[in-house]
Every structure is written in C-alpha cells, then in structure tokens.
Image 1 (tube, rainbow, N blue to C red):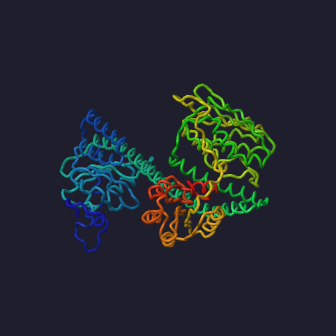
Image 2: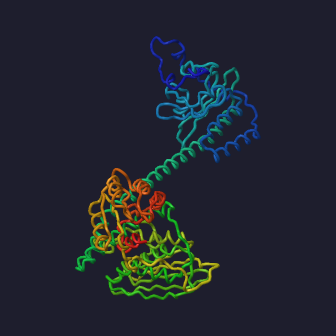
Image 3: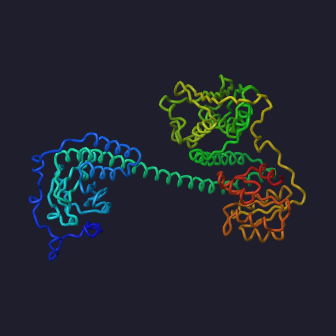
Amino acid sequence: MLGNGVRTPDEAARRPAPGASAAERPTARFEDVDIGDELAARPSRPPNHEREGVALALLAKEIAENPRNMLQKLAEAATELCDAGTAGVSILDGDVFRWEAVAGVWASARGSSMPRDESPCGICVDRDATQLMHLPDRVFPTLYAEPRFVEGLFVPLRDHGVPKGTVWVVHHDQRQFDREDERTLRVLAQFASAAWQLWQAHEAAHEAYEKAVAAARSKDEFLALLGHELRNPLSPIVTAMQLMRMRGKEEPELGIIQRQVSHLVRLVDDLLDISRITRGKIELRRQPVELLSVVLRGLELASPLFEQRRQEVELLVPGSGLLVQGDADRLAQVVANLLTNAGKYSEPGTKIRVQGERSGQLVRLTVRDQGIGIAPEMLGRIFDTFVQQPQSLDRSTGGLGLGLAIVSSLVALHGGTVEARSAGPGHGSEFVIDLPLARGVEQKSSSVGPSAPPSSRGAAAPAAGKRILVVDDNQDAAETVAEVLGHLGYEVQVARDGPGALEVARTFKPNVCLLDIGLPVMDGYELARRLREFDLPDDLRIIAVTGYGQDADRRRSKEAGFNAHLVKPVNLDTLTNAVSH
C-alpha cells in the first residue's frame, strides 16, 4: 500500500482470491454504486466563467511550453474548479489504466496503475459516457484507501474520437458533484485529449529525430570506414602504376587502369564530401580569387573526360574583374563537377561553353552543353542527393548522383545560388551560378587563385642521405611506396606495425616517417607520439599516409604531432613534395 492507502501497481494487480478479507472482495453490485441518474436531478451551481477562463488560459500556455506536464496541471485545475479532494487523468494502456496525472489527497499515487476490469474507469471507457458512483470501492476493492473514495465523477477522454482514458474527480466526504462539475470536466477532458495527442506527436517526432540522428551517425561511420577500406587497396595500385611509368613502361593498359582508378577515387571522394556537407563539417578557406583561375583549375580536373570524348570547351571568362571571396579549391570542385556533368551527358565531339560575367553585385558563371537535356519534372530535383537523369540499363554515364548535390551545397556555403535550365530532353542544359562579388578588395588579375594541381609540379629532388621509414600493415602499399622512394634515391626501411617501427627507428634514425593510421597493436597517433620521444634527427618529419581523410582525422593527426596528412591514394608528386619539404 502507498502511504495514503492507494495500492502500488503490483498490489493493485492482485485479484481477490477465495478466503481473502472482505476489503479484497466486491461487497456490492455495480447497480448499487451507480448513481448516474441523480446527476440530472441535483441542483446545479452557477458557472464561474472568469475562474474557468483563467484556468484554461494557463493550460493553453502549458500545452505550448511544456506538453509533458500539461495533464498534471489539468488534474490540479480539476481539483480547484470542481472543489474536489482528488482529481486525475487515467490513460488506458493495454489491459491497465495508468494514473498519468493525480492531484490532491491521492497525489502520491501518480504513476501507479490499475487493471482495467478492476477500475471504474473501465466502465466509463466501455460505455463512452459520464459515470457518477458512490463508494465504488465496494465493487472495485483495489480502490480501497483512506480517506475513502466516497463519490467519483468520470468523463471519457478521447483520442481522435475513440475513448482512451478518463478525467475524474473524487470527494472524500459527503459533498456531491453536479451538472456544472460535469460540464467543467468535459471541457477539461477536451483539453486533456488535445494535450495527450500533442504529447504523443511530440514523442513520436522526438523518437523519429533520435532514430534519424542515429542513422546519420551510422551512415557517417560507415562512409568513413568505406572510404578507408576502398582507399587502402587503391593506394598500392596507383603507386604501382607510377612505378611502372618511372621504369619507362607506357602500355595502353596503364591508361585504362589510371582512368578507372581515378573514377573510383572520385566516387569515394564524393561519398565522403556529401557526408561532410550534410553534417555541416565543411570548412571553407576563404580568400579573394578571380573566377578565371577557379575555372581553369576546374577545367584541368575535368580535362581527362573531355579528351576521352573528344569534346571542345569554349571559354569566355575574362581574366580580371570577376573577383569573389571563396575557397579556391572548393570552387574549382564546383566547376569541375559541372563540367564533368556536361561532358557525361553530351555526345562525343560536341561543344561545351563556359561563360563568366558580372551581373550587378554578382559574379555569374554559366556552363552550357549540347547534351540530352533535362525533363521538366527533373528540374526541381536535379540537385537532390542520389538523383540522376533516367539512364539506359548499361548506365554508360555512371556516377552516384552526388556531383550536382555537392555543387548546390558548396555554392550555398559561399552565399550563392545555382539554377538548372533546359528546354527539355534533346535540347541541352544550362547551369547558372551566381556568387557575391567580393567587396573591399581591389580587383586585379593577379589575385590569389586556386593552388596548382599536384600533376603540374615536378617532383622535388631528394636530399642526399635522407632516410625514410614507411610503416603500413598493408604489405602491397608499404612495399610499392618503398620501391618508388628507393627508385628516387632515398634510403628506405619498412615496418608493418608500431612496435616494429620503433625498433627500426632506434637504429635507422629516419629523417621522415610515413605512417598509416590504422595500424595493428599501436595506432599511428600513438606511434607518432612515441617517435617524437626518440633521439631522432632534429628535422624529423612525420607524415600520415592513410585512408582516413575526414576533418576530424586531420585535426587528430595534427594534435598527435604529424607534419602533414596525406589521404590514400597519394599522387607521387604530392608524396615527394611532402617528403622533401
């Protein structure tokens, strides 16, 4: 029993058994406690609309600000408006009624429950009508408590028109309820119904949000793992191709492998980029940049596709006067994605036009192709994630439907807009980007532009006597990198894990350490910290060469003491420049 005499859920669930005390068995029939006919005959007090209006206003505020607590506030209002000893809200949950809210004498019973067929609330719900009872504990002994439940008034609480509970008030003395109490309780029941539905919707929305967050987290973790697992096998393939070219081999098959590997790398990068964008993890390095330099960088990135499809690019972008404040590399990625999209969806030998101009306080870039065009129903969805134009079964254009989604997101991050235009299938497409014109910066053609691509820089000459330690548990990756560096004249040693690397470093005294992050036994972060504690050359450079390439991975490698963070597969020029920095 609770302190006030109301049974706990376990006590309330016990049914009367033969031989139980009189208090545990019904001592009357329901007809003996049902006094509903008296309600119409009793004199009714006049309504107090002012008091009721204040109470309803407070309840409305509670619905808006704290729907979780609204039913309890409603029970407290019922106690006051009906001058009751106890009031409550009971919700049907399967075969039991939960006392969702209780105020007054039995307030401590809030949260307890009662079997449906042992509760007067069950009669109210079954009949979907107001019930008035006198000493109902004679029929429902689980109600027995001190002070006794002398008279109770029950009104159905409906959820979308279906009775799902009750709002009730109780007198513990000889006072009686009247029709005004019933009217008041019905009004409160309507509020309770609205509050309950709102709370259920709130809970459902919160649950859906939590599931969405968990799903997004799982997706991001999966994409990070996928990127790592795909980049690891790609790395030795790329390095092996570079090694073959260094040995003078230029078979046509190498070009095929190079194109397909580059395609795989772009797919992986797109997957990780869209994940970072949707989580708001893209960090822009803004600087004044001329549109032409961005376009030239994007054109260079897309040029292998144009060469393969023998497509011509008409460039109509002035060298100065179109200055924007943006991340040069990300803007070049935008241009490259638009050009790649134009090339993929246009026939070989066609022309693609790229035009830059000023439009008021905006810098406008237009990419126009002579390709398959865009159906009207697709124009509004073309920038959505994973959306692509309908393709034939051979999927000759490939891709995942991420390129334009990345364009839209990156342009928005720069404060700009992008629009797709097309007269329909067979009439080509036009993509128009508007970016804010840079303010407070003198517009000169010598403005800082995007960094030159790695392939445009010659590999730096190795320093005499420089020793490099390569640590990677992927045997093919470690051996091909070591062979390439050895071919360039470096002295190279290889280790497969952290402890082995520390053992080699004691005697080898490397000037540069190339470390994978996901090593067995001891990860790359811990290995970097340990190497910094060794008596190694003062100019020691520790470089991460890893499949983990998210912003958090780069920050963590920097904190661990790495001088650079390279993501697999690594271009040979990028690697040698990092080594000889």
